[in-house]
Length: 153
Image (cartoon, rainbow, N blue to C red; front, side):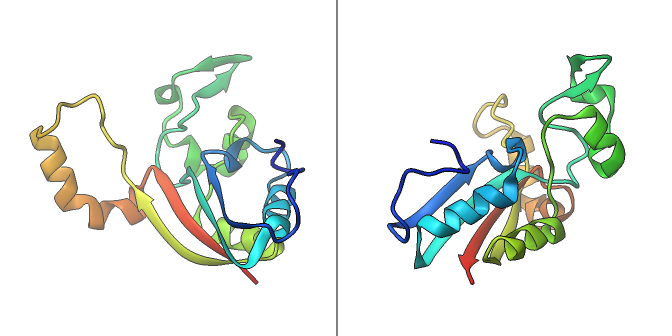
């Protein structure tokens, strides 16, 4: 289904999830309004989306009409005008997500961040142990992904 046209009855679901979806939509406010339409009054919307503070664009960068690795333009996500020009996916911070939520009939109920999972490293690798200890300090500033709960107004 299209995120902007869900074939569900109004107030018919308890939970809507948008896992790594919001950044790809041409009309994020419309998609959130549609999620609000199908949610019960006490329903919840859960979102994960790329975080603006993460220094690398997670979808690669567009240079000369070609997609390049994100390391070609590090810190691009920190420069919104350049990011819009060189990326075809959005990034969000807590403030921009809060504004989007409120404009779409939601209240930002909870926000947290995740560091990269480093799945390429074997389980028990010492880097995992170090990052587990640093996660509470680093993730609010350099989290790769925002995890948010939106509550209907």
